[in-house]
Length: 133
Image (tube, rainbow, N blue to C red):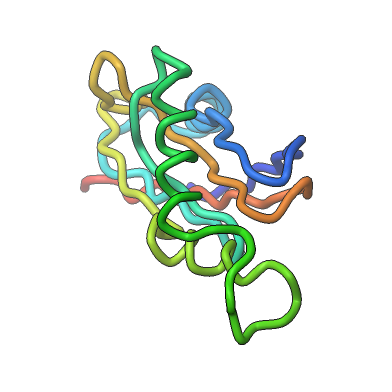
């Protein structure tokens, strides 16, 4: 099973909880067990799994990334989004989530987030279900 989501981000930097959209895509296509590979084909956006219950966690994560990699610094990449590339490299562009009976296996507080670092844009999120045989 393979699917593609399109996610419209609203801000330059944000984390969008895409757990529900991924689960809906799986529900319509599989009832099996395996692993869902989540991939973002962008150099200025990533994907991560983190707490989805408390919005302060997202604020803390974005604040920490901004401290580590400030928007403006002496970057050689002169297009104005060098920080976005570095943040994406730190966060990563893929995640693997177990699937059991067609449902994502996530912890009580976990969610899957698209991490936007150079928005707003429309981003693609590719899903591939690798089923057990």
